[in-house]
Image 1 (spheres, rainbow, N blue to C red):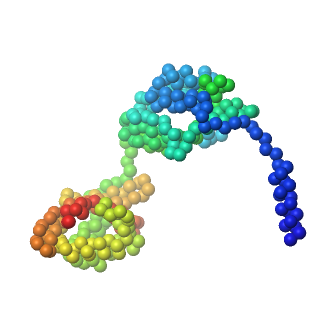
Image 2 (tube, rainbow, N blue to C red):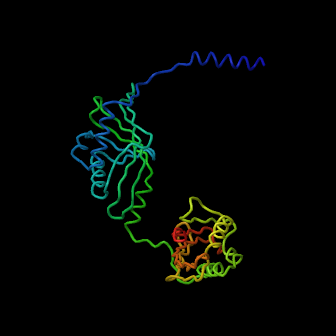
Image 3 (cartoon, rainbow, N blue to C red):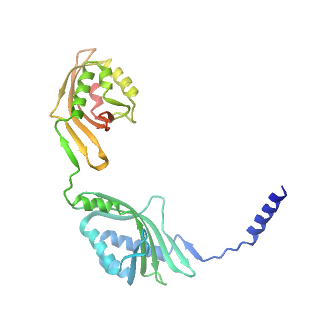
Length: 304
């Protein structure tokens, strides 16, 4: 107990005597913030004249994700702005949700603005949407009229995707006949003929169902319960395969998917009304040939 009292006494005295050394001021409204706002606007609009006026002639641009890697100077920055102008539509530089820039006037390190924002645009050649979160630290001159330095922190993955999309790249193989296609056909016709046990055997025990008519993913038990209620009022009189299924064996992420198209010919039990229901299934398989995810596209209102 005595040791605890001594420790608490020490911490109390330390908190009273510990020194705080103020090293500047922090602002959420400041001429430096206005300067960066004008720079972001000029960058988004591709206005090289205004951007050049704001940038100091000896400005340096650094990649903050690496150790002191200098990307370039004023010419490189203006070249990047011009690249955005030429290759992207709908460009904007907007503050990230919930974020706002801060201006910092350091006693020892000068004037800075830190800004969290999203770079948005659509690549003109590939159509890839860029929504790119960025943190930039801007150093400013003494009268807040010039940007003297930029340190940027960002993830360049989107830009790699754009680069990849500019060249033709194979991503696997498409099959028009395959055991996984056979599995989809067999389960469909088993289900049509009321052999639920056989149909279920083609699915993994932990399969999930993503039906566009439902608000959440469903388990096997949930999908069977839903379908039982539906088929209490309707009968499948025929099942027609439309076109032919494809089996896609992707290299990227090692995905294995069968896509198939069907027409369910339905008859309402109460009055004999007949309805054709087009359905598209996308079935993802595991390495053992079991379906681990089924996505269904169809219009449930046809059976209202």
